[in-house]
Amino acid sequence: MAPPPVQSISPLAPIGVTAALQAATDPDFKPKPKIFDEFALTDRVGIVSGGNRGLGLEMALALCEAGARAIYCFDLPASPSDEWTKSCEYVKRLENGSRLEYVSIDVRDQKALWKKADEIGDREQRMDVCVAAAGILKSHTDCLTYPEEQFKDVMDVNTNGVFYTAQAAGQQMRRFGKGGSIILIASMSGSITNKDHAWVSYNTSKSAVLQMARSMACELGPEKIRVNSLSPGHIYTSMTAAYLDTQPHLLEKWSNLNPLGRIGRPDELRGVIAWLASDASSFCTGSDILVSGGHHAW
Ligand SMILES: NC(=O)c1ccc[n+]([C@@H]2O[C@H](COP(=O)([O-])OP(=O)(O)OC[C@H]3O[C@@H](n4cnc5c(N)ncnc54)[C@H](O)[C@@H]3O)[C@@H](O)[C@H]2O)c1
Image (cartoon, rainbow, N blue to C red; front, side, top):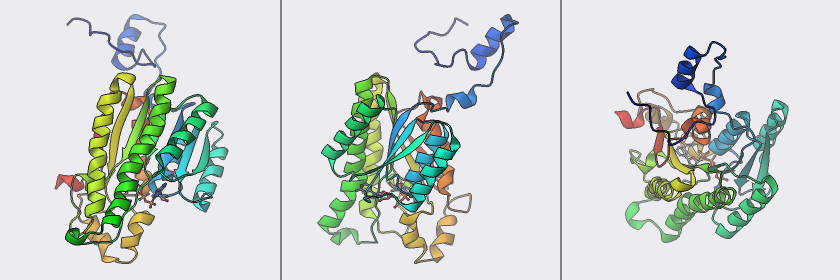
């Protein structure tokens, strides 16, 4: 077999089988496990929208544990939640040089997002990761009489806001010329309809995010800016608590909709977010990653 064409090289090279082959011919070669190094986010800087609580905060904390220098959590409240503040303290106690920052901002405000990301770029002199997780879900509403304003509200946050967040971070990634990873939080509801739930605005907004990720990935690939969507299944957060706490029968119903027979935990997105944000996923772009307990597999 001819040697493979060299179009790119791992920053951790030699790695994997290449390292093993080199070791076989070099008695002084010291083998070293590198798989966890591929996930390391040492010194990287990122933005997580919706990072004040729920899935956004869980993912922001995971990025800090993976070694990110600073993760900026963008969310609506003027000051962060108790949960966020305690997570920020926890990150300090990790003593890995990582920090969480809080920014009060509305993802519907494109200009404010661009400006804030530019300020972060000035301060940190890099931008590597973006997780666009801010989102809203409304109560059941009949699709044929769905009110215009309510439909626009959902699209404004879940689709437009995700786009503006990705733009803001992507502009900084372009500015520093080192590529980056943008992760748009969609939902399994972007590719399936949740049985018995009248959520036409949410489902529509999430479907748009899937195509947004593919489109942006194709435009930005040459700049080494990767764009993927992450589509979680049912997970208990404030968003889903609005249904699960008021209609307790839904827990069993939702649990029985996937082969694992339960809903997910926010911490079960830690691995996938660390993978997508890091060089461990360096050949992954334009993909939708489903983490749904197999909801689609029936
Ligand atoms: N929980 C689930 O089962 C589930 C499943 C699939 C996808 N998702 C998606 O994951 C993301 C996070 O959801 P969650 O479950 O953690 O819900 P959540 O309600 O706990 O968190 C959403 C966050 O977004 C913020 N936000 C809303 N509007 C905003 C705006 N205009 N500007 C800035 N921030 C704003 C909220 O303040 C909140 O902190 C959402 O995009 C949601 O659609 C959740």
